[in-house]
Length: 255
Image (tube, helix red, strand yellow):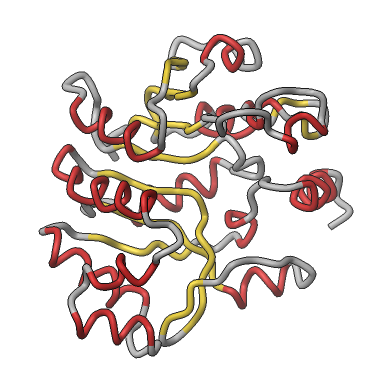
């Protein structure tokens, strides 16, 4: 297997982040979990994964983030763009990048080499791959969890904050991502990019997740694949105090 470049998105929202402040820091990525800055956990998992080469951590404040990370010749901490989409667009234009690129986030505190390896193995050959976890698997493991579910024919899914970008040809998908950032409260605009039949299929749950991604892929000229991960904890990130308490309990063996 070709070693991929891993990108960890460790950006922060503009202004004061009350979530970060509640835990004694000004950056969400530096919130401690089990005595360890949150961003350090996914970075260490990536460094321990054989299929991962360089790990690039992108943040608006790289100096602060780098102090929380281990010293490793494979690790680079650098400035990000203002948004996720602008960051990824710059990545697509970077001629020094070794493709494919695995993208994850600093709040993926339960990420493991096993999750990463499974995702990469099933992503081979795709232009874009998206990690997901089924509702049934996650609720069986964590019946108390509350998530936002993407519902399709045959099942509902939660995102796993794992994405594979196969090469610079994925810029069209990144541009679509930028549109969604600008219209995050107007999801129907995104659905209309599928065409009328795709719009109806998504709204009425007439299409499976993969059929929906196939429709998007045909529009973009890309192969887009959903990767259903076997470990339901791949869908757990830390975005609010309740998530912090849950992840802490999982790490301590109490959940």
